[in-house]
Image 1 (spheres, rainbow, N blue to C red):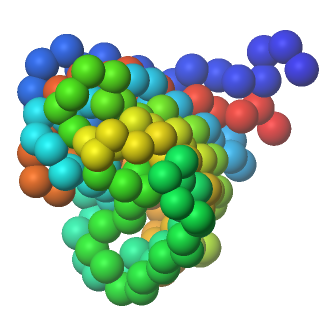
Image 2: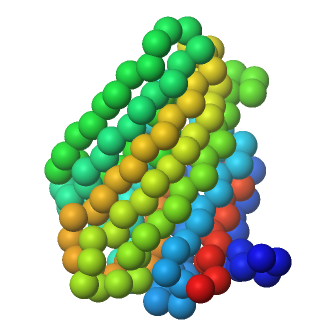
Length: 173
């Protein structure tokens, strides 16, 4: 299926920034893919979060439900979930500032351009945490508002994004 993955937007961060937004989602594609590569932070114990964007602005309402299975190299797996938060989580554990403490994330976005459905996503992530611990996560989230979303914003809850590449793709129908 050569040519079925269409790059829509890409942002590379090389110094501290509060957030990164990827926009350009509409009804052109049924499914969008987001790839985060080598994402680092400027503060230990910082979780990577996301919010959907509407007309380019993040939706901060308490309408995010999420679930994740966390796979760890230091102990057994854990399951976590929450409802009615004002953000979604893109990393299963805390990032840090040490060498190689980065996150790699792949997300699939569904119904984002459809104003009659909830926006939902699945994600998988691998990271070296600030402990340091090798950590993998697989999960999903739903934004429980029927509205068209044009993108997704990423930020860390207690620090800045210090580096990484953020890419949005459309999957050809």
